[in-house]
Image (cartoon, rainbow, N blue to C red; front, side, top):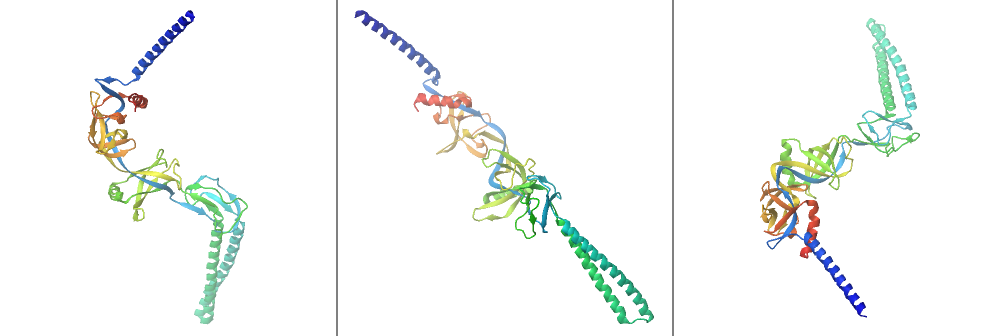
Length: 392
């Protein structure tokens, strides 16, 4: 019994030693991960960035949609059977390129008939002109009367009118024959075809045979608030204005073009004005009826003081930033901000190029706090550990 008691005591001692060692090791690990304390003050891990100086563009942003310069639904002007579809769906075609052929044989026959009638009446007109010439000579000699001469001249006039009508009929037959070959009226992209070889089409059909859309160049119509109109008009008088368009999520840059014109009236219901920009669209990134975000370059601020947008904080007293001093303490500095471009913001007052500002971890700071600059990638992990240590 005594041996058993001694054995239990030995086990308890060993367990205590193991627990003590584990606790001491864990305490050392936590101490290593705990932010440093200097002179009784907590050191806060933060991400910092240096204030820089660069040219800052001033943009006006608006919502818009892509519109083709020319869009046409091609229809037939003559009746007949479609004998040939000379394009592929989605094909880019040039102006004058053949697209569809309607059976031309009936119109060739009609042309030949009109030409035969013209030839017959021309022959009769030739005889009538010779008769008028002979009767004129006989009238001078007193052989025929004035009435006979007038009759021959009237016959000549009637035949000349018939010849002109025949010539018009020939021209009309030629025109109808031309209509059997449907060509592209401008450079563009062919949509889905609406007819197949063998279909009978009529000039009175309401539906077309294909839709042709001009893709190069292409236009974007976008809107801006009416308050932006005066500076835009002033800048437009000075020269061309650049316009960038982005995808609907504003992440993908699609194309760069120039402002063409401003609409001649303001929409009273929305208080906006419509603007039209032109794009070469060489890579076909813009598509008709596509919704886009347009950015009109209004001006460029030269040598602006620029910081990451994350460095600027907003509070009850306005906008401010935490500036890191050489002794790794921070001060709160009031700033006046200007234009924003993506993740950058221009500061008009309060910061100077070369200053270091806090971009992550501001929620743990106050004036005079001591900080430890870290890389932006590690700032989130260190900030999380800091929150656990201080019990936040």
